[in-house]
Length: 277
Figure (cartoon, rainbow, N blue to C red):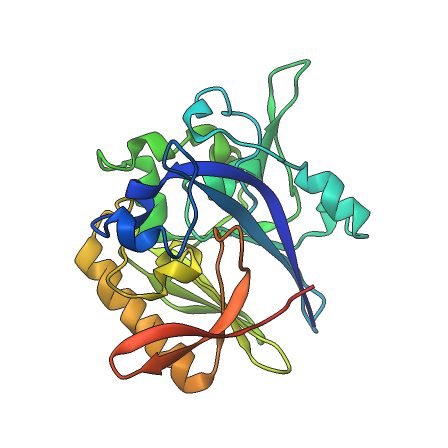
């Protein structure tokens, strides 16, 4: 089994939005920002080759269909994910499964692409099952007011039309080495893949714990639609991560990819940095 990290690009998010009620005097000691209060965030994806022959892609970044509408985020250093996969010896047609933690634009935008000559949309991974939770899919189709601007039907409708959308209602094994678990808080029904490698379990935490600075349970983003739920879900994830010595992969941290965590009295902290390909 192999796990590879691909950073599909970067964007700026407002520090106040990323850290919610935490004052800048506190969060600025853990995460840098520019003169406009912008924090650089990564859009991180995983490629997992399993022992049973699957090639699994977890999240795929923003793509390029809606960049003008989203210019506020100042995207930069975007890559074409298909080209990057080919450079790593993987054809997009070989991807067997796409796991989408949730359907905000920065996690699923490359699911479809637009043919510039015809304007038609096509699937980036035409042979893959696309895994989404049912709660997230329903929220995507009928979004609440706080998330409406984060969803674009063009990113996902072609998947449903092709019969490649796989909805889950509860924690579900994708294969012997990958379990898809459901966490709420940031958005309803976020999927968190738990990946059992030889040396340890890796947890692609998504926006449950997007940054190493977010390991503190009280550090909850203003983007989280249900903050108390987010707090409780973070505790649930962290307690197991400490007990089982799991490694957390931070999907948005531009400066640190992955670490174990420790608990000191009532506080959670980064422990050892874990390196992935």
